Amino acid sequence: MFDWIQNSADWFVYDVLNLDKGQHLAEALNFFIYDTTKILILLFVVIFLMGIVNSYFPIDKVKSYLSRNKLYGLEYLMASLFGVVTPFCSCSSVPLFIGFVRGGIPLGVTFAFLITSPLVNEVAIGLFVGLFGIETTIIYVISGVLLGTVSGVILQQLKLERFLTPWVKEVLATAQRDQDTFIAEKQTLQQRLPIIWDEVLKILKGIIPYVIVGIAIGGLMHGYIPEGFFEQYMAKDNLFAVPIATILAVPMYSNASGILPVVQVLVVKGIPLGTAIAFMMGVVGLSLPEAMLLKKVMTLKLIAIFFAVVTLCIIISGYLFNFLL
Amino acid sequence: MSKTIKILGTGCPKCQSMTGVVKDVISENNIDATIEKVEDIMEIMKYNVMSTPALVVDDVITIKGRVPSKEEVLALVK
Image 1 (cartoon, rainbow over the protein chains, first blue to last red):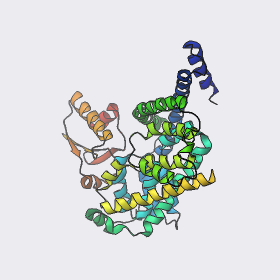
Image 2 (image 1 turned 45 degrees about the vertical axis):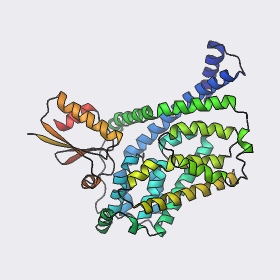
Image 3 (image 1 turned 45 degrees about the horizontal axis):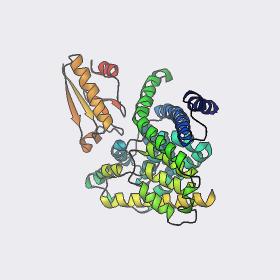
Image 4 (image 1 turned 180 degrees about the horizontal axis):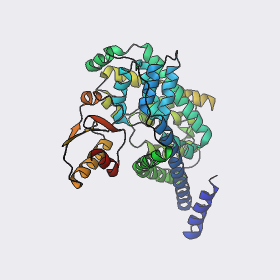
């Protein structure tokens, strides 16, 4: 499918620039051109498709659905799945949280949504397909959804309502399930497309610099670090690798799109995929800016419990991946 | 009649660009309107929006969760 990109990259590096095959610089440059083109195309496609889905499943519809229907335990999985198709902006997490709580949606279900939404988002999926291929992407998406579901169930069991800030408790006290059905805007796809298109371009513009820098760094490492270099440090049987990778990852966020290309190279050079996936989930799924925002609705203790549970689940899935793959 | 335009948002980059768009439209077209930025989350939640930024014209929520184009804003405030 991407042969033509490889051919163009070969042509540009070996014919136009006249660099020798096998030379470090030539290989790094070739890798950079190929990866950048491929990933930008995939990002564009995925963000665009998700934009269309989201246009038909806006967050208000999701909330209304979760609030109105009794789902007998499936609501955690549903919330988690909805999180996949909803683009996440950390600045929306607080209004979203309040909106869910006000609609009588249990705290654990709200958490399931809040966990999966950033973890499995359109940018992460686009990058994943480009860097690791479809199979790994599917594994990532499924485990992201399950992670959100399981963490949501655990958090619900912990009865955390008492750790909400006072004004949110008030909201909780007056919460009621939605009576009326969400009425969708009646718009044709043609009317929606320009708006979706606009959003796609905005998202791409925001991440392109990070992606390019990330791939450039990856490209350099690709050319200069020998195959299997990390195997001696981060072998599968090293029990500490997964937790260390996860905990290192939590504070990184704004440059997730820059970090993923680097991680891909690390995997090629011998870091086990489970360790790498745990790292990436930490980068994409949990962020300190988000924690700061959540302070408006949760006490620090609750934020700490929330992050601890999710981190723990990420570490467990990292071990699972290393064990299974 | 003067219109009241409110921009609901906690101060994220998207909210700032929405404010910019709205201000431009108002001044470029000499529209009689007051712009108010609502940054307090409890105030925002009174409007029952779940994705910011949101644009409120005369107490009606018109746009939420995205940055509108100038033409779109103009059509809403005219």
